Length: 178
Image 1 (cartoon, rainbow, N blue to C red):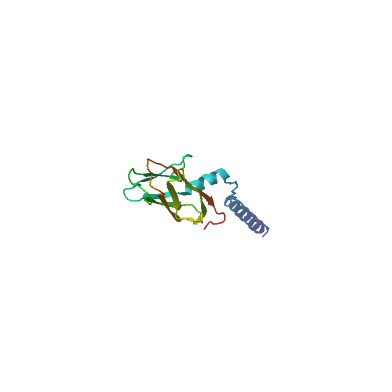
Image 2: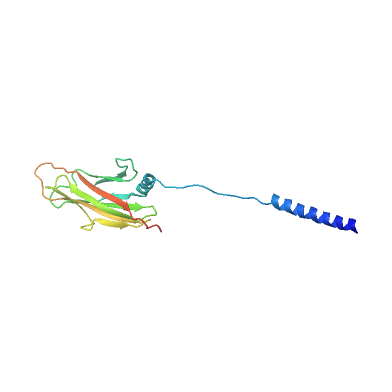
């Protein structure tokens, strides 16, 4: 009987050891560690790439409106409007250009008209449809339409030209992620 008891105890000990070794062989610990960050310059570059001109259309047969890269090389951030010779002949003649700004990012933007002035204010005016409200909100994934009108103020007696610049600044509205 003592042998039998010893045999049973021995078998139980072997079984317990086998279970312990088997359990240890079937476990594993996994860990994940790391760091992450966003550099403000990278975020600014990403935002700059999200807001740009997507449409520039001038009145039929009156010239060209071409979207291109700005002086910093940012794609679609510059519209060049060229009015054909002979289109503007005298007082009241005008050319209309329709522009569209798109925001493909995940932040809304406040778009501000900074400047809108021709170099020759005696003979030309350059206006937009934004009127006195010079800041518009551009929703994430949305578009804004701008109408630019170039008008002759008085009939010249000799050749006159003008250059003009319309400057817009798009500023991210923080906390507007959908």
